[in-house]
Length: 287
Image 1 (cartoon, rainbow, N blue to C red):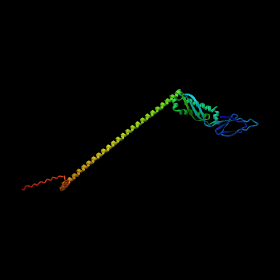
Image 2: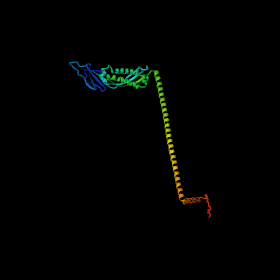
Image 3: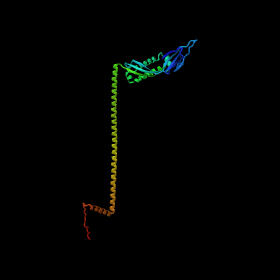
């Protein structure tokens, strides 16, 4: 913010693109001057020349660092916190008229919001969820700052400083938590592996049992079919022999022919022995 009282000899004022100008005539606000060249009132010789004052307001994004403030947490631990705020003026008139110094006011508002937020959080909450602290500060200050023409882009926790002995203890605690988490992950992994192996074995046993049962069923069906075919074959053979016997009974010469054929086949074998019974026919007593 730069104040300029215009010299009556000046004819115009040039405002850069990065700034806006608040124009006052005799102490009364008149208008907001945009970027460009703006003419000033000419000098009057027979009456008083109005006094013109221009306040230049920087509209660029800027950083504001809230230096380390020692604050007590909800569990009575004193820590020092630094916060980086990025902001820009969006309403130059409100920024100049509603507060004496908008940068100082923003500094105070962020500082108080950080104190309130940290006072409601435990040390563990701060360590495990620093983003929550930043979001809490931004949510509380954003609307307040809009009221005096300031838009806050972000309000991030830059540094957290703990007492020396507490820092050492927290490092040990964090190391122990990481070790515990690693052990827990390892135990869960082993449990999952054992569970998967158990499920795999059970599934393999089930599949093997189903396969064995299916094989036994197939064997039983095969044996049953084989027995049926054997019985059917034997019955067919018996029926054929019965038919043959019936034919031989009806035609005795055929039986004799079969006997001669069998004798012929035996005669071809040198080791075969044939015994013939030549009995004399018994003469019947003449009457």
